[in-house]
Image (cartoon, rainbow, N blue to C red; front, side, top):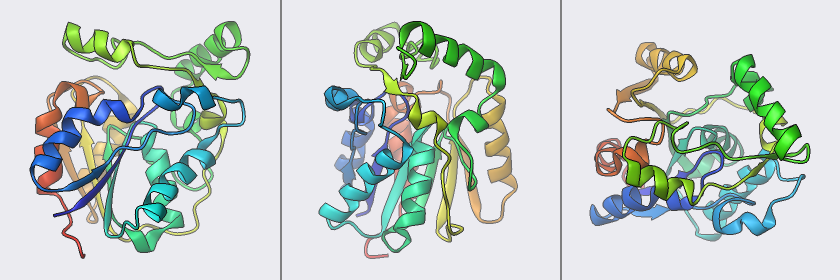
Length: 238
């Protein structure tokens, strides 16, 4: 049995992991799917002050209050920022990091630093025109390359706005994570994610995998993603 904490990306919530989490539990693993402050069922807590540090604290709280150790942290997209921060702050509790089409930051980088300028310009224009200067209106499931129409409708009903501070805050890291690191890539054009996947393929301390899916791998291929996570699990106690 292993312990997984699955961390969603921007505009999503813990809901997006439902099928993947259920499949992992059927394999006998413990699985936690926290929703970050201000999103999903916690959208009533959305505020301009919500930032990356708060989201890192969200997941730290799960590890602390659930008494979790030897944890495999899995981050999707923006969730890669969060799991990187958690591992830096609680390295004694984290055994592995899995980046699922996720951002892999270095010290001092923000989400805006890691995204192409053209996407940032579009996002900032939306924040000004539809988000009162601080809310990021959600993209659509189509923007995430969700493949089935019924899945796109299901996702679109659940996406919620997010504070721009989550994208502007620069992460502060004090160490290099020494545990297991994995990158899982979907199948759609995105040079950022491709670059991290290539680096993982070439890195001696990384593993790299690919699934036939859009950006929301846990929506398009939930069982396949669970099976892959199950193969790279880290037994507890580790």
